[in-house]
Length: 82
Image 1 (spheres, rainbow, N blue to C red):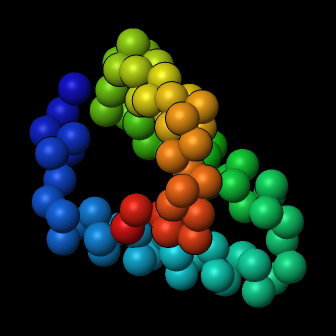
Image 2: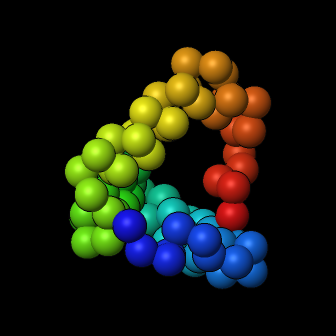
Image 3: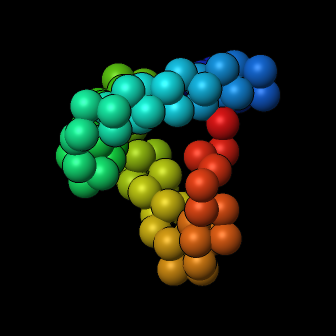
C-alpha cells in the first residue's frame, strides 16, 4: 500500500471538486447515471489496482458495501464526500 491513502483534506476536496465537475459535464451530455457511475467506478478500480493489493481493494469494497447496508449513502445523498 502506498502513502496515497493518507491524502490531505485539501487534496481530497480538490479531487472531489474535479469529480463533481466531470459528473456535471457528463450529465450535461445526457449520459445516463448508470453509465457515468460505471465509468467512474471502473476508473477508480483501475487506479486502486495500480497502488493497492487485491486484499486492500477488497477491504475498500467491503467498506463501501457496509455503507450501503447501513444506509449511510442515502443519509449523504447529494454529497460525494469531496
